Figure 1 (cartoon, rainbow, N blue to C red):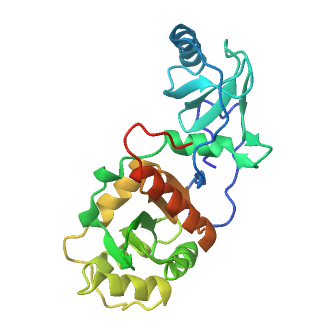
Figure 2: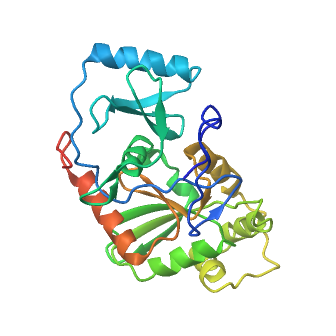
Length: 275
């Protein structure tokens, strides 16, 4: 989970992500890999929501508010303030920063809702700046931010070799604070005659030509800027076809489930329910 935003720091401590990713400066919030929660919230009038939003912006000094709605608890509301999903009373006299779990299914409703609100438009990603990897018919799509020297990236990409019917767009995203040589390596990989082969040699087999040069026009620096803009704080991090972010080297079954759920969602006609 991301460290709570600066306006929440006096009230909440950071929660550290399990060791499935190389983390830069602050840990990455893990995103949901399940469909949206099915718990029903009570209806709230537009006037009530406007008053609550006004109270939120006053309480948190104008911090951005997103996804305001009633929670599954009577009299309790939820919204994303910056990077954190919080729960609070109508007057915002008290609030909770933490995970809401549906007991019957053990679904983490907080993570699911946060992932939904933070989803990106994958159509805006610059695919020409990525290395493309396809297995099978390539129907399911993943947009992966990966660091050549990150051991968890190696773990994830090793797992991906056993997953069929997938297209992976690999955005080379060095974390300089952890792997100071990675940026130069990744520029050299982009300049190789066969980028995918050079990347997989370096990531999967730890084979890299120390004399290779990254002096061609390459996207690595702008990919770093892109990842920071999208909120990528650790590697590996990937986005699914529906735009949801997932952080960490997940096991095969969870990757398969996430890919299938995202694929089903994007196939649905506009306006169709995901429940």
